[in-house]
Length: 133
Image (tube, rainbow, N blue to C red; front, side, top):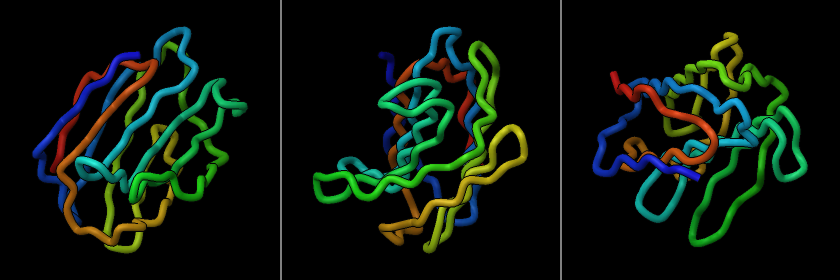
């Protein structure tokens, strides 16, 4: 499992984080984590076939050393071996994650933060670009 980590970035409320990548041809799942050094405000885990889920996006947060309640989303625009684009915006209430097919995944901003400094990407996909505007 490969991991890409960006530390000391500045992703603020009102900005858009765009991630472009390609899912591996044999991918089971991959994850995008946005937050701080220890805590994850948004863990987004598209699962092709992993952890008992098939073609499901699972979102969660990790606070105080433990995982919180998982939320699942029905849309799944990801295809094996195909490019994807994920656009993340947030405010103190929630994250809004726009996917390639136009669907939007909403997830509560459980920390209520207005700025995040840490992005980690891991799993069965290749990242081609990360941009904050």
